Image (cartoon, rainbow, N blue to C red; front, side):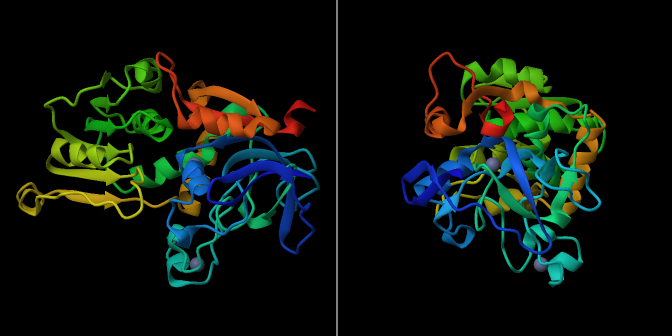
Length: 336
Ligand SMILES: [Zn+2]
Ligand SMILES: [Zn+2]
């Protein structure tokens, strides 16, 4: 079969790859559509913490596919599915208390096991979720990044009428603005970097979009830029008694200055959020199946598998004057 493989640092190409063989408790799925994100760039560049990757690696952790064969409790062949990427052991202390994202054995599709940018993928059957026939593939492909955002939002006791800021204007930032709407905030200000992202941010549900940080302060600041400047800006914008959620992933080994007296005096909570729990993923699937979340307008760039490196190039560099939301790759079976 064909797959988009990272052999090592900066060695990514579409090539032949062994077809997965049948394994007990696993199901073979045909990927239809997959997103790529900044984390894929870190995997290609090998700048990610080595704890979280195993090369050579088939990329692809944001995706939707269809069952190749019947799967018990899920459906017949052709059933469209999404699959939790984090593979929890189910028996460690973290898994037992529901923190499956912190499983003692880190294992994730597209990181430590083959991803979905391939003609076929084998996945643990217990992690497969069917999606409704009225859900579009373009909405479903965003379930994985939405699960990341949902997990982060569920860390904050979100009262209605909260003032929320999102720092960043990439997909996770835009999805944060889109999803926090469900908690009925008073304002959702997106503090971005490129004015070209304004329309996407407003469409996502932002009440306003700023390229330069405002003097406002907020009950909840979601840092989704993954930059040191973004973290500093997020901390500075958080009102007394508020929370900063760090969702963007700055480069491994970077540091940020912090005024601890401000954290104490302002009664701040600084909350990290890693990946997503099984519970968060399941909740997002439920809401997508109810058509409560339809984020497909965020898809701005589309490629096919044989042009996966063009998708990576689109992700790396933006053209002046061009909005960039989610970059997706349509798999061969999507065209069939
Ligand atoms: Zn991603
Ligand atoms: Zn575990």
